[in-house]
Image 1 (cartoon, rainbow, N blue to C red):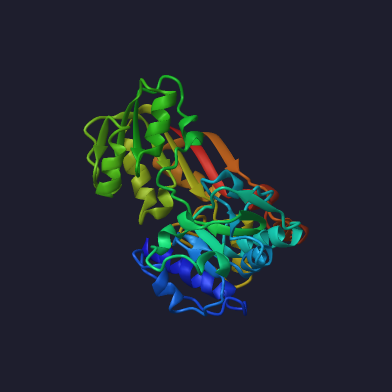
Image 2 (cartoon, rainbow, N blue to C red):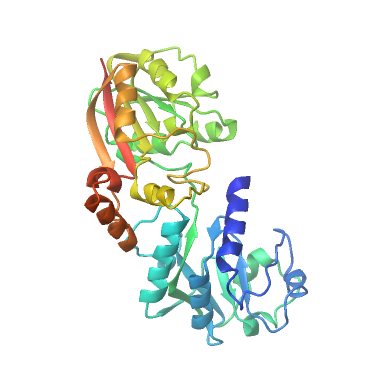
Length: 374
């Protein structure tokens, strides 16, 4: 998480450095009091408090928040790509996959919005802009992380201010992979089970299935035990599975491994005859990655297609060849194709007009495959 926190902090500062109004950036500790912050900022300034270290700011959104607050409200919050507060869950027509495409989507929110200010009882504490009037009378010994609990007056959500939040991927249920489990499968191994999101979902759909998991992180492995019949705390390359299984699940796994080709060979040997492997991998030929590369950049991010922990890259042809070499035959393939941004659509069309790539491959951000052991 250290990379993620550091990335969000530095990227936010970089993206907002053009703002004259954001004249002072103050880092603070979790237990810091309001007085400690106020002693380091101008007395008449509004206060933008970020309590979620996985949020990325940008100048369009911050300017929008300031214009909406405009001394009319006590506090103002943005919309996010992910929030537990439904009023702050952004309704997006397009998907973004890296910082470049995030900035495009955020700009579309800022430029296309009528700056509707929706009054709410409570704001997502991850990022809130407080008016100076709403905080100057507060007692100085309030913890900064709980400031939202003490604000009086009207609080609003600015639908034109859109921020990015890197949300928790380790609890993902991957229902899309669960639904690829064929009838008749009675024993499954989930490789890289994390905190058990897949297992929790599987037990709802197929409670009769025996489910084992392997997870190298002991804390996450312990969290997964409540949903799994057996959990092995080790790396997949050191796993000594004491029984064969009918299906192996590998959601977003192979791209993190030093030798995924050898691991596929090993996993094939753990399967019963005619057993299955279900896997998903990001597509290295997705338009957002290609666009970055031909413009001379490749920015690693905390997670997503350009995740800092990805050390192997696959296209549909590459992963198909790897499975074939390991002794599998593909019987199902799904190409996840979220709608591109307007600039993405134009880029794709330009690529096609010049004879580079094909539409299906450029649109695909994730490849989901079920293959059978031969």
